Amino acid sequence: TTTIGVLALQGDVREHRAALESAGARTTAVRRPEELAALDGLVLPGGESTTIDKLLHVFELAAPLRDRIAAGLPVYGSCAGMILLADRILDGTADQRTLGGLDVTVRRNAFGRQVDSFETDLAFDGIRSAPTPHAVPSVHAVFIRAPWVEDTGPQVRVLARIPAAGTPGIPEAAAGRIVAVQQGSLLATSFHPEISGDARVHELFVKIAKG
Ligand code: GLN
Image (cartoon, rainbow, N blue to C red; front, side, top):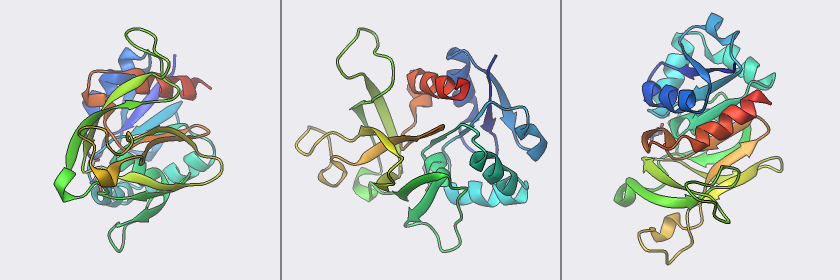
């Protein structure tokens, strides 16, 4: 079986574990450096990236985690988790650090005050179609003070974007923005698939973690 850890310092750990288990993985909560050894993959949940950054250092997880990521550990970061995986942040706090690994620049709290949180359906490359096959599978995406990806390095594959300008319910400034990416065994989404009862993004990650 494939064992996926969920970083359990802050955030919606239980929802991620449920989604991963329904995707066929065994899961464990990760709080200590020793717990990294047994993992085939790790999920960094949403929450507050500045807080998780501080806790990663308090719990002495930051350095070993950075090393494991550099050595190829598959990691899926959602929302704050995406920020933690990014090599570069815009609108972070002055002393905010990331684990890095993903060659992207993310803008924190990018969607701004007026659209703080919103939901939309997104075409998402690489996931299974459900319930019936469509040309481009789509997911229902929930954004909560989410980041977006402002630019991507050459190895990064864009999996999902906010729909184009003019789509009903899509704020002008958000239109077309990149909200899901993959680079090798690193996966990141701006949104929270774990809270919409749809495990297909987690299925994709379990597949990545299996190699
Ligand atoms: N705004 C949060 C941050 O900057 C992320 C929000 C989330 O994870 N839902 O870390």
